[in-house]
Image (spheres, rainbow, N blue to C red):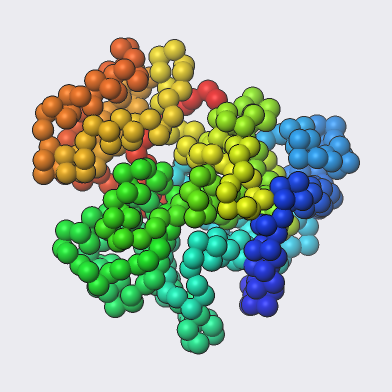
Length: 433
């Protein structure tokens, strides 16, 4: 694709940094304007959405507000995979577009198309929260969130000392990263939460003092209280957690107040739904994303399986960007009890980490194999003892009920998914949400 305009990216970045301080109603007006323009474009230029509107008896004028989105059908990864060509807008030259392939951790990898204009906005969306959390353009960042980083040609701004990056695949051994980090001396590290934990563990184990980032950015996995506390103490650095997906870029992020995740509603419309109705603040809902800047391949009411809890609280930082109180992971991270009740994946780290330190249980994973069978994988720590395990299992039993069989499996290591991510809780039983 054509080279991106650094001037346009900087202008988009300036706009995002400025608009975050608007009031929430003002930001909602911006979202509304962008949403109506996107809906009109999709109806007129995207075959998939034209059919969807026609089948639902709708025209663009029927979608005037954010709340009206519930009139439209939900779009799934299966839809994008099956009708991929029909999602691309007429007149778009795919050969000149950037392509993003999802990790396929759900078993449904999809390809997303993004044109030059969308890429220039996407770059600003990606970079914006790093700067808000204290990272400076002249500092260096090590990125451990790209599976197969190619050898990258330096951009002109890297030659003058701006936005210098080191790329490293989280699938490669931690030991290989240590000498690279020592040589690079990054001010910040951006990585999957589980990889940050493993990296901190290795740095502590070998007593490496030359790796001293001042800011840590977490993404992809659930950042548990233990992981946050441990990596922060090892590196003596503040940890900021980001939420997003490759299809629509980053969608929410923590500021220095750490009271939740600011949602970027001027770049993505985020719905929290149950039975296709918007939930109230404080209630759990499945997240639907509508990307407001990618006109080449619009995604409207797109479901990736994320689950979260919206909030009506105002952050003390003063930003008008609304808050997501909690990000609870993927819907297939929820455990299904015998009566159909769902147990959120955050409950298990709380139980494990309340009963055991990292020296007692080094790593763990909970997998629901069947509706009545739960497997607890454990990597023992140096101070592991049976009392810790007994107490932890008793608390898990109270949570899941007496009908659930619990099998404990001890392992030397728990491998990550092929995406490089590590899920603490997984269920093979499809929940009804």
